Amino acid sequence: MSKEYKSESVTLQGECSGELKIANEVVAIIAALAATEVDGVVSLVGNMTHELIAKLGMKNLSKGISVTVEDGIVHTQVSLVIQYGYSVPEVSAKVQDKIKTAIENMTGLQVESVRVTIAGVNM
Image (cartoon, rainbow, N blue to C red; front, side, top):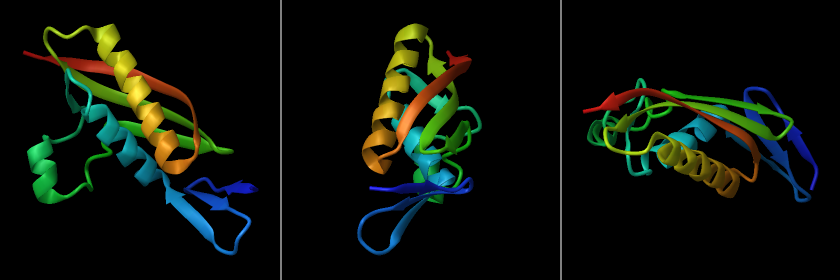
C-alpha cells in the first residue's frame, strides 16, 4: 500500500480507487480522548470538563494537545493536570501508552513520540 502525506492532513492512498484524509485535528482529538480515559488525569490544560464537552461538542477537546505528522510519523505533546495522590510517572506512562495505542489503532499511523507535561495537580 503506497502512502502519501500532506502537512495539514494525512492522505492515505490504497490499492483501490479513492483516498482517505485524516485531519491533524482528528488525530489530536483521538489523543485527547485517550489521555482523559486514564485514571488520575483530571483534565488537559486548556480543556473543559467532560460534562461541558458533552454539552458543547468536541470542538475544544484537542486543546492541550499538539500533533505533528511528517511522513506518516506522529509526534504528540500533551499538557495535563493530574489528581493529587496519583503517581506522576505511572500516570504519564499510562497516558503515553493509551495515546500511542489509540492513534495507531484508529488511523494506521505510526506514533514515534508522546511527550507528557504535567502542568498542575488538582487538590
